[in-house]
Image (cartoon, helix red, strand yellow):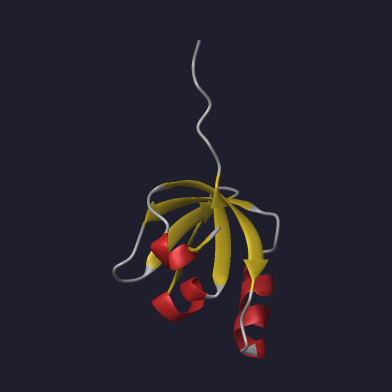
Length: 79
């Protein structure tokens, strides 16, 4: 498990949203970013983190990305 701010390009599952700011949690909920969702990071830090969720690109600052804990989804090996 690692904060989204430290994630590289690839697919991840959101494990926990741990924000002390109720406004940040509300914004994430309104964007449809919830615990258990699968996302794909397309542009990692430094700078804003950009990821795809269900075909929609979402960008967020480093502070908010620090509050989202993710787990890497291993890539499927082709046979």
